[in-house]
Image (cartoon, rainbow, N blue to C red):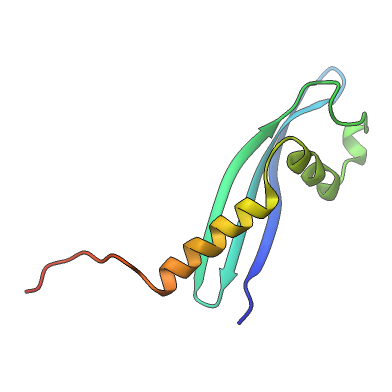
Length: 99
């Protein structure tokens, strides 16, 4: 079964005066059958960084592009999730007692 990776903007922080988005709260999730892994974080930028798009006209795809442009390494995040799922499938450590 192929791993399904989903990027999602969970929330945005914005200035009420002009609607400028200052921070995006994002999550990326990988699911492979019964196994899953997730990363949740934030990305911020200065007022002159993303283009001025009215808040009401923003799309999730546009904000995700801002997240990646702000320094979030998309490929590294997805690889970390793949590595996590690989360890779930083939653990290298265990705990418990023998009795």
